[in-house]
Image 1: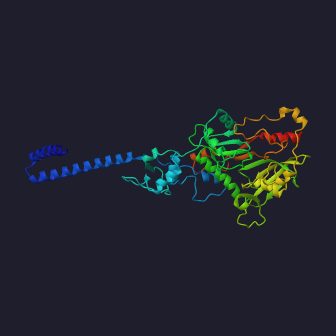
Image 2: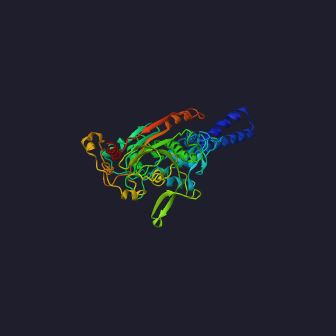
Image 3: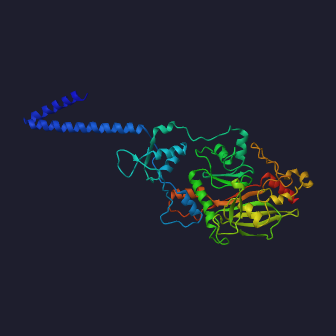
Length: 467
């Protein structure tokens, strides 16, 4: 189709050349130069069209920008000495960047795309005409763009089982919130509700948080620590992936550093205080329990139990430290303890109370079943019955957690272990500083003090023993 147009241009140029010179060789040279210019123009247009067609087949992600390293930030807040090479700028892999930009895509699909080498990257440091393949573990540079096959938009998002919503459930979950800022949300976990889903668990707190606690955030709150199912009290969740990474690092470093720190002199950046009602009374009014814990497998692997290890060099032994003090005692055979775990081991407080102090926690039938066999339930005193105003009003119970009973006046008490106080760094303020100045000093970041009221059954037991 370009033939007639090319011919007219050649004739027009030839007339101009003949008017200036009669040299035929000049005509041939002019024709050759014009032919090369035309071929170059057509080739560039074809490449441009081909690149546009190729881009139409790809899903382009936003360019990579430098982000704060949440794990390094958490370690710095926890007082851990940073390496020279480690800074607040996050070194992110291509896999993590895709997962951050496309949280709705199943993780298995993203990993499969990298495994089949169907992910491309347009590097900002190198001038390239076409994006090149990138592996999952390759680091991203500022300005790099990732391209995914456009067909990923047709794949269904990761399956999450959501139960039908109800206004009663929403009000109940929102009533658990104690504190919320742009980076974290803190709830007062009720007893009997599992924190994380699993086999045989229909409703869990992380699933309910993803459903009712987003508060116009695209991301669901993430767990950064755990509480036992029957335990109640303060539970912290990160509202973003960055804050969750920083918080998780703080909780992890607290356990790691407690092995070598001076427990009396060193300032603790993370402090947790539990209240527990125990059967009996410890010999001392307070002290520090340092007893390693290990796991025992029972019934041919069908069940397990945590116990104090006599051999600290055993492979399964884990360093565990708990600080305790008596806050109240009763002539009826019960004692209120304040427990401060300096490490975060599974069932640490329950085992230390039962085996180290010899005073199992009320309602802990796993580690104190022998003490409960001899225990007789304490009837509610007449003075408390007459002053019903002192007993807190129980909340609605849409999840059938039996929140209205379980005190020591009932035949089968619930676990009396409650995370009542917590002091942790202001993650929101720390992230704001780190994003403004990369090498800012985070040692003087202010802390947040959180307090959770006692659950209904523990408050009822408190009133019963105080009368």
